[in-house]
Image (tube, rainbow, N blue to C red):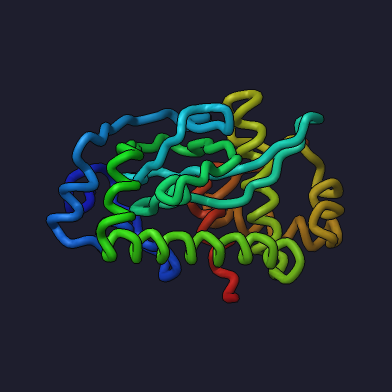
Length: 233
């Protein structure tokens, strides 16, 4: 099944998401997309990094994340990017986000012309309002990720931890998998091995993960991302 504009598999829109193009009139939509290009990237590709050229994207389909890392290799996911959302919206304000962007599943991106985006943001109230809505959503999502780690229920904390670990693993071994014991994972989320075992059992039953001794394979990363977004803040 394809979405209304035939760009790729349709995905349900979470209530907190911002369908960026839907906030624009047809005229401004056409102007924004002038000079844009479209590319499809396989899961595990880093499509943006802090030292690269300034870029802004619309996600046609797929799933991506923004993350920071430190010299010893540790990473922290700071945003999960879903279909119809804008990534790199701060570029419209001349501020380059100091983050990496990794696509987690095969993902199609519309790569916007940054100069055009900035011109429209400066000249068109509708475009600047749409960017403001996007940035406000991104702040809410950042709050949500922080809250999940401390206030989320076991299911939400497990989902975030698995997605974060699996995305990191994907960059190293090319697969969405977590190599850790249930005791390690329980310690990571501040729970017990028994509670972690029940949470993994439920995720297996839903087809989101499969497990083997010492490894958890993520079959449905979008399912984990949806659980993370379930937290109401």
